[in-house]
Amino acid sequence: MSILKSADTWFFEKASFGLDGSLVIEIVEGIQSEEKELVEIDDNNSLGPYYPVKVTENSSIVAVKFSGVLTYSTTNESYDIGDDQLIKKGKYLFECTNSRYLNNIKNSTSIDGLAENYKHYFLWTEDYLIDVIATESPIIEKLNKSADMSIERTITYNAK
Image (cartoon, rainbow, N blue to C red; front, top):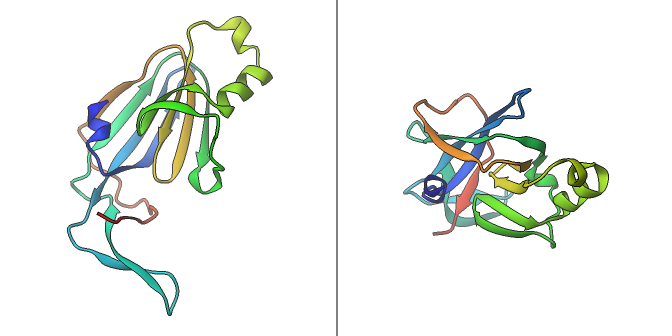
C-alpha cells in the first residue's frame, strides 16, 4: 500500500463491480503545485496563499482491487458526517475494526450468519468515500495509463 502513501492526495476516477464479487476502484494522484495561490471565497475575500493540488498529465493512476465483496457503498464526501465509532489503520485505504457502516451492515443483513472472515475497508478520496466489506484483502496496482483530463474535479489546497 506504499504507493498510496506516497501521493499528496487521491481523486476518484471510476469503479466497476463484477458479478463474481470483484470491485475495482481506480483513483488518480493529486499533485501539489510548486506555486502558491490565493483561494477566492467571494468577490471581496480570499484565503491563503495555499498550494493547489490537482490531477496533471503526470498523475499516476492506481487500481484498488477487491475480491469477495459482500457489500460496498460510495458516499459523496460533502455529505459525510464522520464516524465517531471508526477505528482504522492506514492512510487513504484503511482497514477498519469498528464503524457505523459495519454495525449497520451487521444489523440490517444476514452477513454474520452467512459469511466468515470478512473485513471492512474504507477508501478515502477527495470527492468520494468508499466503504467495502470483503473476504479478501485488496490488491493495489499502478496502472500504465493516463488520467482522464476531461473529468472536472474539485479543487483542493495544501498549506505546506
